[in-house]
Image 1 (cartoon, rainbow, N blue to C red):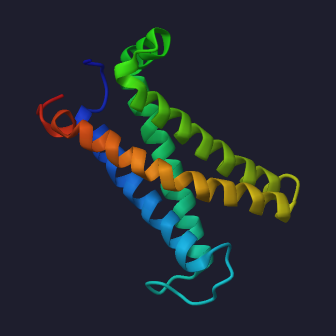
Image 2: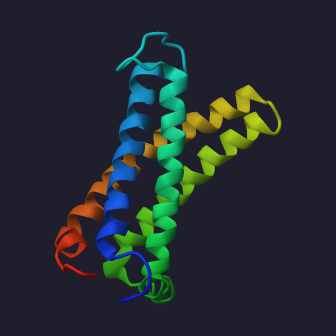
Length: 155
């Protein structure tokens, strides 16, 4: 679909880079820091810096996904209405992404608005567990579209 605005390769590159940054920093936080208990630095940065980087990369990813859905909105909603079995992967990927986004957002709201650290940690733990299958779905989604992502210059 040819919509005005940013070229397709720029949108796809933004998705790829913000996805890699969000995933890598998220896995670092899960594995090395697990809820901020470790005090050592990775690459010269501590838990708070990596957490902020993960939040910024995730926000960039959400913006890139919103732009991606705007550019591909008609085919996406056609899938939703048709319930096309051959596009089940896209629907599952979208739902898992929204679930990860919702749990992360709920944790942030629990902490910032209600100052409830325990509820925040519960939502972050749920988000962490959802992130593992989300990563697998992200790789499958990207790999199955690799020829279309950068294959047609000028789109």
